[in-house]
Image (tube, rainbow, N blue to C red; front, side):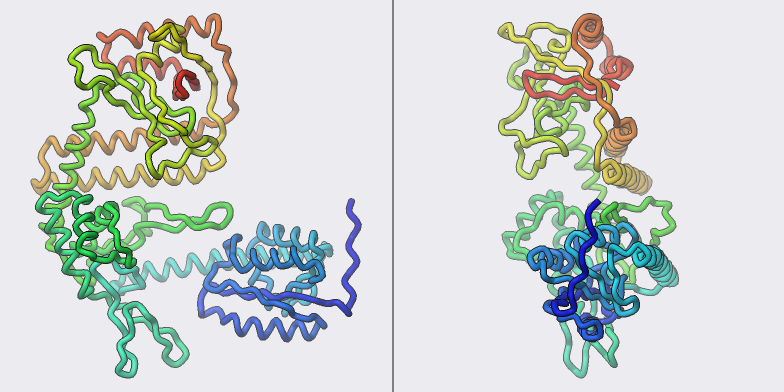
Length: 535
């Protein structure tokens, strides 16, 4: 048990201050600094530095000003006091308070607040009172958040225009203060209150290019070609960048706002265990999602919008049909790279040959921007293997040249530390796929999609949904992993399995069912090593 520290003498009462606010309405940091200086004088503390976080929620644990403060305290062990005008400025919730308290204990820091006074982190009674305040503060945060959300939704339902981030081609009408027009989006302070226009209007420079994008898309240009043309023309993006990424064009063409439909609450902000926010798509039937007419109406002809999106869905369906040019393989969807963890894709190994078609699995890990999955490393070289060699390997059959595949078998799936985040993302993918399928059916009823396109979209969205639900099942089954020796009866059973998989007269779906019944969930490849994962 460590000895309790000796309180600092009054002759060396050195301290630092901390100020923070989430919104301007909560009080300025200058006001908090003045209060801290007054409290420091009352307790005989010399205030050396003040650290600030402006516009940062107290639910975040990685505030830059707070981190800088503790780095300073680590370097200056003669500083023993930390001043805040309210305890809630620095902590919200017991979890945060415990982390900061442990740091204060280790560094010998006494907290000083205007309303509580000195708080010794070693004093259990004072810490209990701080815990009670922290719990109450956290509850107040949640209450304010719910109230704000409820009030905003009520305004939207009533037809009011609330604060929004204007999409491309739209801006917020500039304020005119004393005859001077402010830049679009800039607020003004009138009688001490912040004022915004809150009125959207067409952006004079961006709107013509918005119409041009839809015109090009209606002519059949891909989003990649539209992005290249805009970049060549020197058209800046919404954020002022010179180069247009294709996914930005896709997001613009898909946005129903341009046909006069305003969706409020399409996404919701959730927070992980560390308080970091992330976005999640709301479902079509989520009460937090409100659809109403845009205050600008349709700024792109609704028939043009429907035509462009029907063409995009049709092109996407054709692309998916083209993908099926590679013959279906019984191992499709369950082969993963043992180096980087990514799912491997199939390609014809000898496309110019008219003899027996050989299918090879390739890892995409060497492509730019491909980040290894958690627990894996980057691929130093391209990882590939023939589908036949995988099947021969798990049957203990020699492959070309007399080589053998080294097979390992494991039972169970390792637990994933980021399982909850992955579940949220997978649920979002399912909802997006279902929304895309619903949109395709709507366009089909209008006669803008033919049966083949509808079938292709249905197959694509069903594949996405099926894959996401399979991944959800795997996350639910994650746990302890057991290594199964690939010898004796185990090897014999795998050899029997391969006999069934190799029978080309049996439909691929039945052979895939055989794999599922056998219990194989994934096969990890690090050629020539193969790891088979069983349930």
